[in-house]
Length: 497
Ligand code: GLU
Image 1 (cartoon, helix red, strand yellow):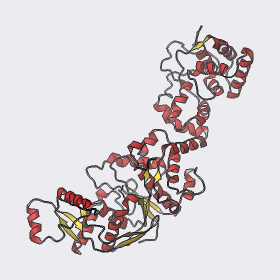
Image 2 (cartoon, rainbow, N blue to C red; image 1 turned 45 degrees about the horizontal axis):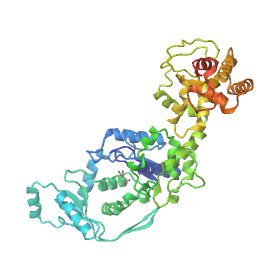
Image 3 (tube, rainbow, N blue to C red; image 1 turned 180 degrees about the horizontal axis):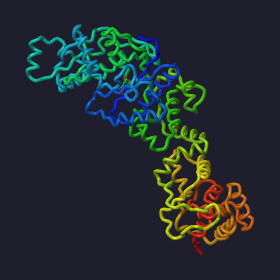
Image 4 (cartoon, rainbow, N blue to C red; image 1 turned 90 degrees about the horizontal axis):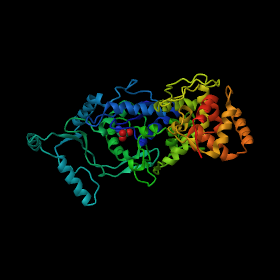
């Protein structure tokens, strides 16, 4: 085995990328990066019925989104390919043939019903379920008789009765006493390889130095070690990290909320917040909570990752997201929000309001249905800066930004608000444009003239301009809308009483 650090992430393309698997991917990625090693992406698609090309594409896309990059994989090749198990079937067959020649396998003709009945019986006697060995010692004649019945035979590995032990990098010594593992299947009756077989062949041939994966695979390690020994391969080092659970400490499931990376991505979670949270979970980060992606390589350490289950808590993820959102500069936040605004058609700009900032009225006031104002990059930056402290996820930035693009309709205010609205309209008359600071001074001046203060002044103005009770700073709203658009919105208000 080479002394190079080589790790792998080996997803099965049978669904969306689960947050638990994403965490495994991140751990492998950081482990490789911190040690100058290589990360291999291997697609475990031997389950022909459940594997789909779309899932493979989507999972890879979600990994890239998260910032996980790999050095070898189906999309980019490498010296150890192919990297899809469905393209490596001959290698698995050859490896099984070698075991068969050495007398280490046997054909098993047990039906699913028989195996299920065995399992129930063992459980009823409070014994761990394992293969009972029914076909282990069949004579040639018995074998032929079963084949004549049309039973296809699976190929099982003949497990030797001996203790097994290995050192796990997270869990220290692990022991599997003799008898705890039954003869296991290598090839199913239809000739397809099992996960156990394919994973060992690939990890050995791809010269994987460290297998970092969830603790649900701990019991597979015993079987896998038997196979390494049978073929004379050096086993890799193993590290089994804890699994994610929900706040109720039960296995993370739909019941708890989102379970796939895509769901959080679609809700407007930032990739840097998500990867930060995945590393934080389980205690792998030293010296604080908040880290930018580039600093995670230094800050995260496999040996710090605890053995105890890590609680995946969406409110904590939201906290990380908020912190990362606030750390973005307004132009960068604009870049992140742009696709959200695009999807909501806020950037469609059905009408270009020329002269908007010059105070010239170029508007056809009647049919403003569907009108989207076009904002300059400078104004978009102001919008992002104003909504940045208010959002927890990017999607919240759609609703908050909407009034900058679309005028409210049918705003009706009490008569008492009339002086504030009219005074602002007068002040804006003939003004070419306004910075947020100038807008602020203007509001102070209106307060002085009308004698209105605080909420009595700001609330009607906010309602008139945005149709909302709450939102970003009023000075930014007035500045970005510009005098003409503000006057148009103020003029559209009706008064009750
Ligand atoms: N395809 C397996 C899974 O997704 C990989 C397990 C392993 O890392 O060995 O669980």
